[in-house]
Image (cartoon, rainbow, N blue to C red; front, side, top):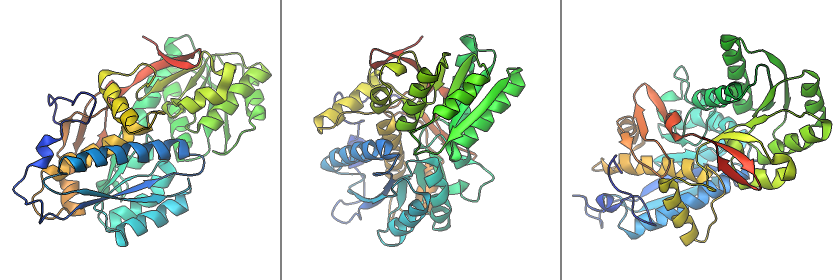
Length: 382
């Protein structure tokens, strides 16, 4: 999986190196990985494809002999899009299932709730979140939390810059009321202050909301040139897009990457046409790497839904590459140390994974693409 190592056509990343090792397969203990994901609740649109993609790759990897003769065993816990349940799930996966690493949680709020437990137990978490505070270096959890995508400092800046470059001189913000929404909304305000671009107004709604006409009316009254939606839940994002259409908030709408899912297009209907997003992958116009993951998914009977498959498999492949370098027992602290040494690792996502002791963010803006909804699909915007 190092840079330059080829992807297998229509299958996995080149896994053959993981099947050879001085460790005898018969004596090797399995590598237990926990999946702490939202398989129900508002974030299930992330959690379900995250689980499906990881399960398919693990099945193929085990069929090729595993990692250094070790098979991978998955333990799965549904946090139901509930941070309290995420903390409970982390405890169970570590203490009862004995996992050496966790992929999760599907939401930033869930990760922030589970990370202190993982850090205390010295188990690395590969977090599929853009939420800024997830990898804050002043956090006690930082040593054991690694992001599997680009930080929202990167994503939000790209989104804001794109809106301004397309003529927005004053911007309104609609955000979801959780760690992700609040962190990114604050960062948009900071960018606006630095650039001298006024924020006309802000409005928010809980993650589960579907009635947001009042918020759309509030933002319309501030007369913005564009609206930036810091929303990851497709149902909430679609509700705002429809409400904006209904109340006459007729300005360009820019959405965060969490909305780069089929369900957002379907729920938005005709109101979604013209909405632009900065996304981490696009199944309607996939890059060559992403197309190979699509082949794996379809071969396994699954239809790719959004970027969740990419960020979950990023976590799995980071664990695999780190574990490949370990002879003997794979413990949390040893695995963490190897993760910090990973750099120039190629996965199915664009760009390259690169961690370091003082940087657990993983991906840069190279992995991002700007798209626009046109006639029911995401079209690349150059």
